[in-house]
Image 1: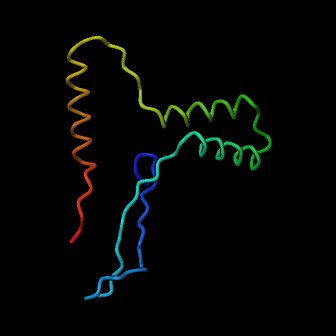
Image 2: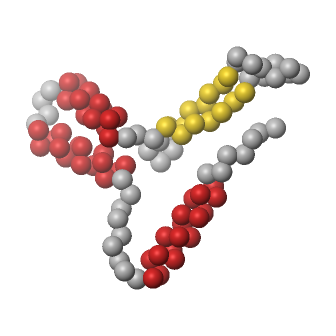
Length: 100
């Protein structure tokens, strides 16, 4: 579990490497979307039937706010430079490197 997402390790045993017969290992980051939030809310409502509609809407609000990034509407050029720096840093960290 990492920042609201699941990290899943997939081991592919179909075509093992010839020398050591180890499977290929891939890590995948599974991010929630609106469909999974809706499904989770349905399951919560079925499990806890004493929740009111206001409770469900409050839970949905918090789940959606946790999923969506905040929106900054400040016209300052400093905000743009900070956002660009953060975006470049995040993009640099998401580069997939093949493992030997």
